[in-house]
Every structure is written in structure tokens, then in C-alpha cells.
Amino acid sequence: MDAFVMEQIGEIGSAEKDVPDAGPTDAIVRPTKGLVCTSDVHTVHGAIGERENLTLGHEIVGVVETVGEDVDVFAPGDRVAVGAITPDWGSLAAQDGHPSQSEQALGGWKFANVKDGTFADYVHVNEADANMAHIPDGVSDEAAVYVTDMMSTGFMGAEHAEIPIGGIVAIFAQGPVGLMATKGAELQGAGHIIAVETVPNRQELARTYGADDIVDFEDGDPVEQIMELTDGEGVDAAIEALGTSGTLEQCVSVTKAGGKISNVGYHGEGEHVSIPREDWGVGMAEKDIVTGLCPGGRLRLQRLLRLLERDRVDPTLMTTHEFDFEEIDEAFRLMETKEDDIIKPLIHFE
Image 1: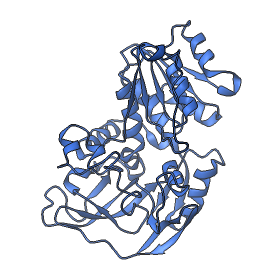
Image 2 (image 1 turned 60 degrees about the vertical axis):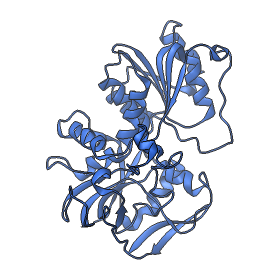
Image 3 (image 1 turned 180 degrees about the horizontal axis):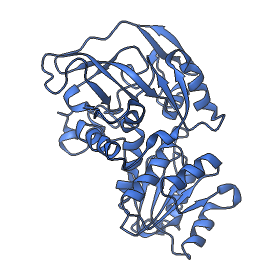
Image 4 (image 1 turned 135 degrees about the vertical axis):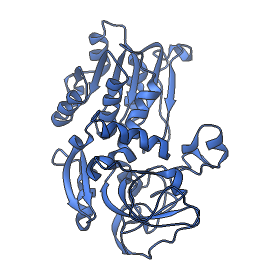
């Protein structure tokens, strides 16, 4: 089968690989639609270390090709969404309420990390009954593919922020995850949503997804702008959706005492992140910094698919480019350079 791979740090290409086999609890899925993620770019640049001939990708929907003998929920021919994070549900971390961290930190992140990812003709899914979900008949593949990561991660950012109904929240960066955090904040009943972004088409989408104010960091210090918008009080919660130490510092600075800082950004560079000491109340301002990896599991996917089925959100507005699987290298290049106002490229496998 054909696969799109990280040959080594800094190099991508195509490779011919064997079709994977399904173990007793596993499934093999034939992708129909996929999305390229910036985290794949980080991986190729060495953020998680050396990898050789590793198939990239973690966001796909598709059709079940085969299932293992112990799979009860799915059968060949089913349309399914496959979670970007596929935990080991019997792990101690899962039993302790942290399935995305199964076996080790970030251990539920298997695709394009510790096993081949999803940019291939066929994809192996571990613990299929727990890590996939049926796509409702009324939901398109083009929409459903967003529940696998972008919706799940962005909404998690809003959930972890614990935004009070009517509260104020600032979301730093309006890439796909930040946009879904903005929509998640609206769904949770935030009273004032502030989006930090400078790219015009992302600013426009942020407003579509619920932002009341846009803070453009090219117009001045975003901390000062947010403090002015909140009459000097700051926000109840801030969401970091970029993955830089600077934006995390800004989140801490604008959050009022007792508030929440929710980090969903991928910090792919540097050895450390920093916290502004005084704005952190020298460590005693009761500002909680909460982190998280995209939640996995069939229940999570089903809930997000229900939002699509009931027209609560339209994630396809983030699809700015479309490519056939044979053109995926160009989609990857655009995600790396962020040219042509790209937000999210959709990949057609058939």
C-alpha cells in the first residue's frame, strides 16, 4: 500500500508498505477523508525526536475493511471516525481518569508517534470498539473528520477552562484548535469571548464561531488590549492554543486571580516555558494552569458527532484547501509555510 512518511528529521516522502493486520481487538480502516495537522509539521522538524520511515497523520474517517475476532461494535463496511488519540483502555492511567496518558505521558498518542499514522491506504486501529465511532447517516465525511482531533481538542480547551456562564474568556491564536476553543466557549455560555489573532480570514472565522472582540497583536501588546477591554479586571479564563512560551505568559498575565489557564498548544520548541512571576502572584494567586491532550474514546467521538448531526457547529468552514492523496506533499508544505491563507487542508483518499 502507499503511505506518506517522515523519512527522517526534515525529510518527507512516499513509501510502499505492507497492509497491516488486525489483532483480536483491532480493526483495519480504509480512509476516505483526512486532515493535515501542524503537529505533523512539528514531528518532521524533530519535536518528538528521531523517526525513520514513519507514516504521518492522525485525522481520518473511513470505512472498516476488517475487524478482529473480538470486535463487537463494528463490522466491515461501517463508516467510522477514528480518534486521533487511541488509548490503551486497560492502562492504570485510563483507570485513574487520564486515558490519553496511558502507559506514559502522552501515551495515548500512537499515530505518527509510536506507530504508523493514518496517511496510507489502510490504517491499523488498536482497541477498535473503544477508539472509533459510527458516523451518523446525516453527517458527511468532510465534517466528521473534524471530530477526530480539532473539535475534540479545541472543545477540551474550553472545558478545562471552566468558563462560568456569562464569564469572560480570551483565546490566544485562532488556528483550527483555537477556533474550536472559541466555538466551545460559546457553547459553554461564555458572556464575552476575546480572540487573539492577526490573520484576517482567521479573525473573520473567529467572529463566526462566537468571538465578540478581536485583539490583533500587531496593533499593540495583547495583554494591554485585553485589560482595556475588561476594564482592568482581566478574564475569568484564558486558553493557549498556539504553543509558545510567550503566549502562555500572556495567558497568565490576563487571567484574574482564581482563574484558569487552559493550555492546548503544542510546545514543540525549546527546553522550557516560563511564567511571569508577579502576574502569577509570585506563585500564590490561585491561577490554575491546566493542560491536556486530545481526549480519546468512542463516547467522546459520539458526543461530538451528535453536535454535527444537530447542526450545533459547522467545522467545514475551516477547510480552506482540498487535495487528493497523491498531492498530500503540497498540503503538507502549505501547512508548514502557512501560505495562501491556509487553515486546514482536506485530503481525499478516493
